[in-house]
Length: 123
Image (cartoon, rainbow, N blue to C red):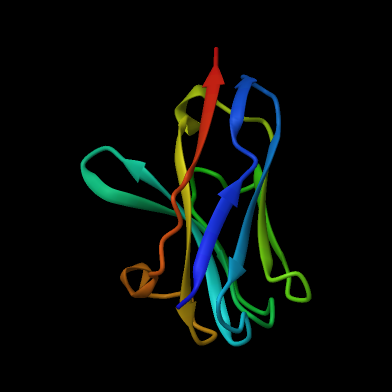
């Protein structure tokens, strides 16, 4: 059974940057897409960003497009989320999850949730 462990969260001022990491262990990282999620008002969670195993498919929510960059190092079984130009509205616990296969949709197919890492952006 896979374990996903997020890290890299913290407190940052608006306009600042953070880099989140999600390390996977317990089974192969191969052939799994990875995604980042955060809670959102009026819905269970917001699908923030995702990346396929081959890095051929990448998704960003409109709310983070142009500010966040997702990447992965398959040799290290780790996925990253570089967050720049942070806004107070980005404040949330960020979770990573995985999904077998290359497709990034639907978000509901992602699972194996980590414990999350808190990001707090002050104004």
